[in-house]
Length: 553
Image (tube, rainbow, N blue to C red; front, side, top):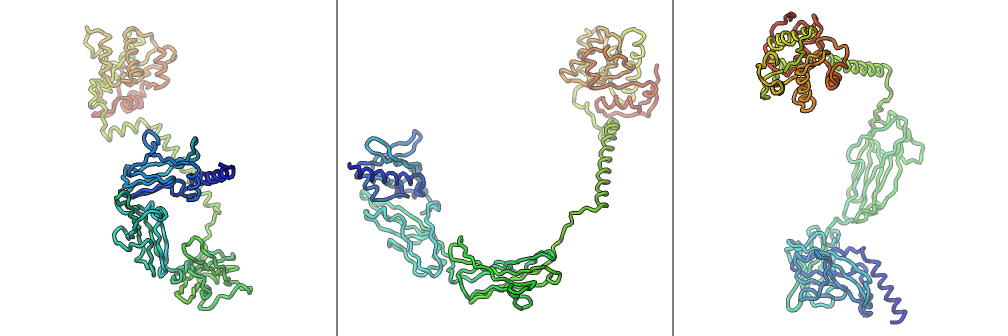
């Protein structure tokens, strides 16, 4: 091959490669049972170029994408190759997929392109693959069957069908002399081709849209329509555009302003109110020639006398005219200034609101116990139902024989039961009172603490004996580790040295606090001491007695 021929082939290859990847023909649709035609590099298709490539020893291979990658196709009774064209006869839904054409010489791949085939069934066309054609009323329309060049060398016949039902003609092209709205629809040309004695079809569909003729369409006012109120500011200049759409550049169409059936003068003079002939703009985005005409009403200095006056815009033409009106109204000016009295009132309201919120928070904190007790009394709430506990609280205290522990023992054995059991309806478990002698102390303490809903500890600075230490350890383990029980710490006598308590108990005192007994002040059932204890005890229904003093025995 001479150098000149080689350069020519190279130019052809570059032209082909330039078009790859930018082609609308990369997506092809075919009706089930018909022929699907896939053309490689369709957008840059040139019969001479492909012929020269074929004559120069280039070949085109076709393959289809499968689960194992692209599989090379071979020619069969239903698969035909025509260099850069692949024909699939009688396609089924299984033929849907991605196909690849590869241009190669004797040794290398020169270029490749992928095409996607969709096989559809149902109607005779698919909207994704239709050709759009527009026409106008009263104009002639000529529909040419798409891609007829694919059958230039093959004997075939053509049938035109409208909306998959009505057969129109058997001519290659379909002609409508005077197009009307009823002619709109989907026109499918069916090419029937014979292969090996069997006839196959290939369908192409044109969607014909029929629009009103520009020559017959009346001009139309677009603003103002009807009566339109326009807000203006006194002393400011205001311009109002009257617009109309024309469907041909008709010199006999006029657009002007009137007031009280009199023309508004042009802006050549120094009038406060005048009109100005605007431009005629061609609307390029419309599918047919159309124009926008504008006439402007100008108020150079809006005055009170211009308000509430009607101004009419008149559209006049040899066909249908139109009109619209505007009226000026004074724009409501919203003052952004805040008066001193309004500002002061706002500050006072904010301060009052903040004081109210703080007061409510303080009251809720100070009267938290009373509020909860009232809520329990009103709702009749009972937390003990269904928990399978026998006692409301297990009481532990300093049971040593020292003189300093005598008062605490009296408080635990007499005062607590008198109020909590007799007057508030709770059931206490006191080891020295309720546990029968003879049992193993360790097992009994563990058993009765687990039967109780609370653990009441009467704090003491005295060194604990073995029994009290075990009660403490068991109770703290259930409270802090297993979280099975809540602890109520009662400070019967003021603790002078918190460090005398076990470390775990010190932490509990710091985190939970204590309920402090204040001798005579705490004698009444409705005192702060008993309310706090009742608040910490489980909610339980009970019958309250009249308040009475608790006498120390």
